[in-house]
Length: 127
Image (cartoon, rainbow, N blue to C red; front, top):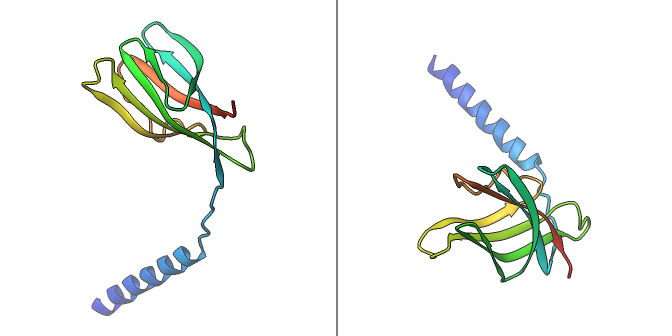
């Protein structure tokens, strides 16, 4: 029984290492945009709107303050995706609701967790 278990564990380890060696890493070359287009949703009012915010600027959304740190896009397909670094704070800057990267093609991957508002990137703009 112990020999079978050892053989099974060894087989699993070898299979996992060969899978890891065969997986390819894809690298996306990005460029920096001057601004980002964001979609804002007020879940209580049921209204959505799109805004353009410049890198380094802030936008007031109700009692939230949205700050765009950076917007990057794939060089090979500029309209295909966007990677934005956002910081979302309360207006008095006492509470941070979100700080990190959001990806336009996967908005649920790293999302704002707020009871009233949703924010997600749509694309980067060059000017």
